[in-house]
Amino acid sequence: MPDDLAARADRLRELHSGEMLVLANVWDATSAKIVADAGFPAVATASAAVSAMLGYPDGEQAPWQEMFAAASRIARAVPVPVTVDAEGGYGMRPRELVDRLLDTGAVGCNLEDTDHLAGGLRDAEKQAEWLAGVRSASRDAGVPIVVNARVDTFLPSGGISEEKRIEETVRRGRLYRDAGADCVYPIGVRDKHTIATLVTELSCPVNGNTSDDLDLATLRELGVARVSYGPRFYRAAMAGFTKAVQSLAEESGRSNP
Image 1: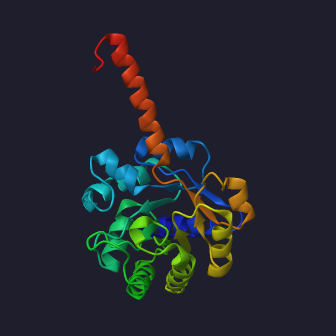
Image 2: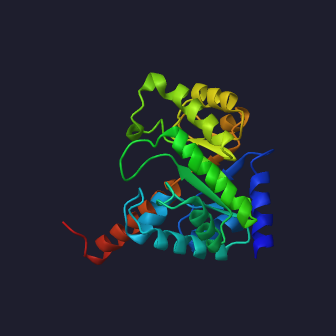
């Protein structure tokens, strides 16, 4: 098993160079199989989607045991590498997080620098130290997990003024990169100039998001290494289900007034 996981981790890391890695984030085994069967070379979870599927709000409100159990079902369902949105790490020490992640069969993780307990952003230097611990623990475990270090400076909850966001994102991103992160994820960036600046200044693989001004072709042109969609597909699926159920309710005469 460790050799197989190590090979999957190496494959996932390779996918961050060359052709841009596109991740259609999933929430359960069925959605994961759909993504893998469509030909995507890796599967990523979205914490907001998984926690909603389990009946909890996002932001480490769902018990980690349930979140990791869902990740295990996803990893068992597909033959491709799986990376887990592990939120802020659930208060775990690096070795515990790595061990529990590997127990699920996943070989990558998304780790954000929001402190869900205290609110706001974690101290960047302490976050970098913790990420370095995760990198060290993964080496000790014999599986070089792929770490996607999320920087939450562009989120309203980050509390960073608009004029300081790029500067602080670069500062944090470089610290996380130097601590051993394989990819830096400045979530919430919506414009071409900003993502282009971050790709240049960070000098490492960058995770981007599509928006009205950023389609896949533009992100590829700008040198973005990885694109993820978070809970977008889960919400679209639930919207379709809601519409179908409401239509059925109306047809059967059971709709609420």
